[in-house]
Image (tube, rainbow, N blue to C red; front, side, top):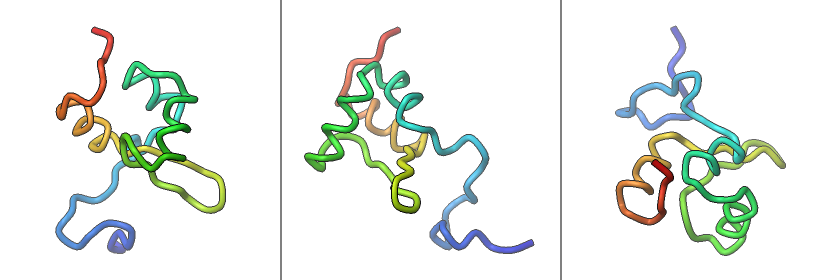
Length: 76
């Protein structure tokens, strides 16, 4: 089994479904996709990951931490 070269040595390996696109991330946070784009441009908000030239993904753990910190209102 090959080690996951993208994860820090002490981190759990990345599992399928851990990364979500901006549409799903916006739904989880209860904001518009454009809001996520504005946050990325301003370098604020939830952490995003850019894969290649154009692909943007959000880690579920970062979304959960952002919500727990009380930085957004999630629809119940």
